[in-house]
Image (cartoon, rainbow, N blue to C red):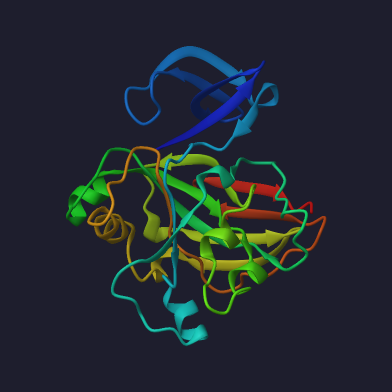
Length: 256
């Protein structure tokens, strides 16, 4: 198992593996030919960035049995997905800020994120699973009042694609068993979401396989696997923490 991170320091950027309270700096490509440089940096000397810069940022809806039952939704046979603006991505500690002209509800949605490590197209599940580099935390932030502002056209891209609405991090973990993990989301320390990933309707390998039959996935692409019950609006000044054991905690303040 390894925890891969990206960081900023002295006006530049780098990447490496997180080991205790330090980063073992690497060179090359995180998703390909990464090699340790021998340099180690204390966490106190760097600022963590979003661990990847996705070309495609894909989000799933209605992918957990408990949430589907609570909301009265049918169980889907394939991924019900939207494309989230890749420029919405922010890293740990960065503020979530809705547009200045928006005064409606803003929801957190803690989710498991899949990071693609190799090009994959028209894949079977075994190939799709092998194409998943690792797992990360995602907060799929949503401007709820924008989603259904026009009765004739649900605005998924707009509601979920605002600047800062795509927190990812703090790391990409390799070697984890996703089915043994839970997603926990806390607002100002109070847990509001706590659900098992084993309740997922479509497994990560199934998601990647089916998506790859419609679009070629590239290294660095991120797929958010959907959320379960407990997603609620945030209030100004709150801190939202998305925690998945083995990956870490993705913390962001909500600062409209």
